Image (cartoon, rainbow, N blue to C red; front, side, top):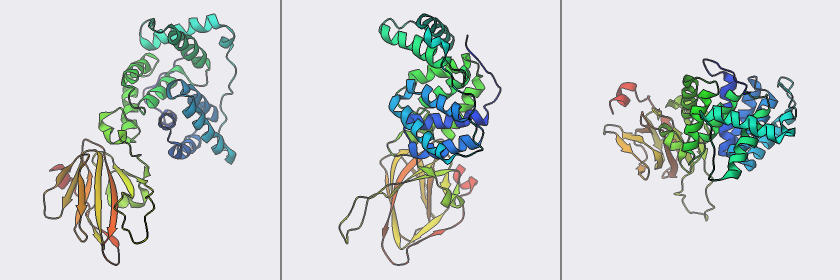
Length: 341
């Protein structure tokens, strides 16, 4: 019978599992490595991570499952003695009885779906779902059924075009022992971290430009969280000036940078997703949408960022126009200024 563990709030362990599940599903191996380290440093066991990555092959595919396991394998070369091995994997006895695997898997699927489900249109997929996914894969006790559904929701939230399956597994996560509040908390967490591509609140992250890493070096000049993804420019002939974007900046809802001035260079912003604001000192703010281009002259005091109800991404490049190129960071955009827009 299904193993269900219920709790009132998501644990740090569950949030770490959700993070690495999301990054596996996205195929973002650059961000996955530090996320795995964070998970291990905060008590998630090696075998729980293995189980999550192998579980998700059924949702994200073998290539991304194997790639994620490869990243984990490289991380484990550090031999950190503080990382816990956890419960050892054992070959489930259910694997030796195909008839029993189909029976148990059908029961687990019915519990997750809320009713018996028969996919008569494609009998082979119906069998794979019942016997293999909900039977063979769910048979390992290393992850509870409730944790498996949270991991699945995190992965599906990070894949475009699977909204019907995501909706089904959100409901299934509750039937498997999680509370609705937990599932809502998970979705809010994924959105706030910029991991969800299926949530309207994080529409910016659904764009073709990767979010990148937290913009820690400039965090003191921002209100809210921003992320930086450098973009390698093409090779140009000597003497040419690049007008190509050099990085993608992602702003969470409500995030904006301080008033600032670019000395000796003008800045070009190319808006690619979400909704944002741009304002020059003494002038009204301008709402930005994908496709808008802003050419900011040198020596002009200004700020830019996301609108309060949307993520926002823009590509940015600085074109040199004089000597002594520098940024002068000034006062923050106050909540009163921002909320009046």
